[in-house]
Image 1 (cartoon, rainbow, N blue to C red):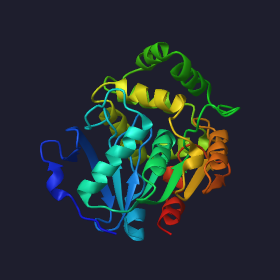
Image 2: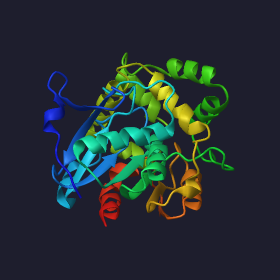
Image 3: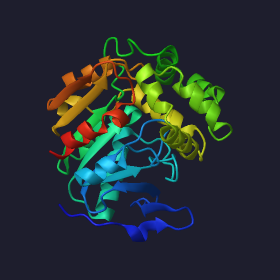
Image 4: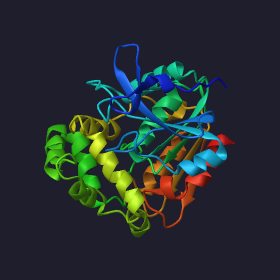
Length: 297
C-alpha cells in the first residue's frame, strides 16, 4: 500500500490542507491519527466538514491515518453545482492519487453514508473495506422513515418532493454563521438520551459548534443539495457493490432510523449488519474503537 503525506499541500493562510482536482477545483481535507498509518477516508455527515472526526487516540493506537474531507461547497472545498453522489467518488479518487494512496478504507456516519456507498460502487478496485455508521438509506424502501423525528421526516419528504420549499425550510431553521449555539441546540434537540450524554461533553460540543460554523462558511446551498441527493434516487444500484461493507446502526436512532440500516444491509451483497441496542445517532463517536478495528482487519 503506497502512501505519502502531503505536508506541502497545506494552505498556510487558512491552516488547511488542499489539493487541486483535474477540473481545477480545490478540495480541502485534514488528517488525524498516525501520519504513516493505514489510510482511512472519513466522510462527514450534515451539515459538517473536515473538522468532525472520531477519537484521534484510537486512530493512533490502531495505526490509522484518518483523512477527513470537505465535500464540494462545504468548509473550504470549492462548490460543484449540480453534482451527483457518484461525482464524489471521482473527487476521492483524485485526492487519493495526489496523496499517493493506492488502497484505502472508507467510513461515513449519517449523511456521509450515501457517499460511502457511491465510492464502494465506483472505486471497488481501490477500497479494501467500507462502513456506514447510522447512515441514511434510500427513501424508496417501505417504512424508511419509521421512527424518525418529526422534523427529519418532514425534511426528507420536502427534499424529495418539494425542493424549493425544502430550501426555504433550511433557511428558516437558522444559519450557523449567525448563531451557531442556537443552531446546535435546534439541530440536536431531538437526539435520544445516549446522544445527549455525548453532546454535553464540552470537547464534543465544541467540535460540533466549530464544525457547523465551518461547514456553512460558503452558505447553506451545499447542505441543502446533499440532503436532496440522499432523498432522491441515488443513481446506482446498491446490489452492484462488491466491497466488504459493515452497517452499524443504533436501535434508538431517530435521525436516520434503524430501518435505513436494515435496508442497506439487505441490498448490499457483502454487507454485515451490526445493531447497537439502545444507542442513537452518534455511535461513530461512542463505538469508534470497534468500528475502526473492523475496518483494518
